[in-house]
Image (cartoon, rainbow, N blue to C red; front, side, top):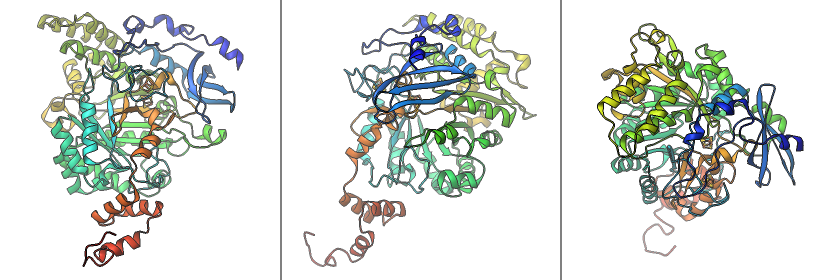
Length: 586
Ligand code: SF4
Ligand code: SF4
């Protein structure tokens, strides 16, 4: 172990380091003036991590062995811990190579003088990314009791459910983020659709100017057409639909019940009412990884409504033996190789890219607008994916990298955005020159039938530009396509503070704090602190039960809180403790 630390001298000792271009674009400080430590590249390297037992910050070494990347660390009190970090070292290096440097975080972070990450979280002066996908948990109630649930919904034994006014304040927190106001939100939970004011909240968010409203759902309520229609009318854009496989045996294991019928109905309803769907597949090695290809195929078969698949390799929380952990561990490398083996559509090493490689596109939009734009600048090892085009007429699946030199194109975009001087106008002539510079990376002869470079740009634009979204495909000239992307949420075994400081998936809380996903659900677990502070008292739960006529999931939760539900119901039915005939103080 000691030898390993001696060898891991950080930046620049891997072969890849020599060719890294991003260092010249790397900003020195956040907007709030905190010095940014750039990511370390090459292997072995040392990062700050956590002890899974006591959560103390301890150093960890990432190193290569047998073509895989491993993490090893030692807590003085709790001993040595080793885990698989990334199962394909070539993909790991590729992600580093396609990194374009950090962004500069927020101009108005809630925590202004943090020095210790992740202890001083919220977002702070040290954080380098803005909120790409902010999440608001509307409730921890759920109409399922899934064995796999990072929100610990229902099992918690208390009710966390911000009021309508609190949710409005949380939405305002997002809109006031500087320099990039966040006008996208995902409502989550628990199951957000069981919140009694769910539709009212969506409508309010829409009226406040949120451009993109996504609902993280198990699909039970949206299997009802009327409810799906009401979602559409309120302003929902997309269902982020749990989808762990194409087999009820899998759902019984991951969610406790057969659910496939609800999932299919939700997709059908989304098609009928004009919403889009992203399938969300929580992947556990040995349990449902044999279905990752079939889930992607389902997305391809329904590309008119399904935008793609978001795979989430399981984050392992709670006490677990090393043997169990290693059996369940699934990394982005495993995912890419399973998709390759199960579909034959993609080559793991060639066709998968880090999500953060889209940074140059955000920079270009920002340069053209003359102000910072939404840029997905998460750590390159947090997320990887691929983008598939579906050939018109033949249905042939063509990964984008077969007809676009992605690294060349993105490097060029980055260079162009750097050349645009702040405040200067980007003339038509410059635009035409830029277009030609980029077109060189598009190999028309390998592109699917009928897809031109212009069509390619329009299809990409459809992911950002509301009028070009896929649900409107019939009316527009975007080309059929789906994405497959994985985000490996961390757990305390593979935690890397270098990653969490760049996190782009953020939770907003009622007191105006914003926490990265991997500090909210793991690490310091700010979820526990937030929910403990805002949990409702037993009297409030009783009032809600009465007002909502005793819904099932609230009754279950009340029982866990040791509330005598039958007594409360009897009292409610009799009109009060004295029959409602006289005014009393009880
Ligand atoms: S995760 Fe980000 S916001 Fe939280 S303490 Fe670290 S740098 Fe600050
Ligand atoms: S949620 Fe976790 S895995 Fe995803 S970007 Fe944030 S730190 Fe990385």
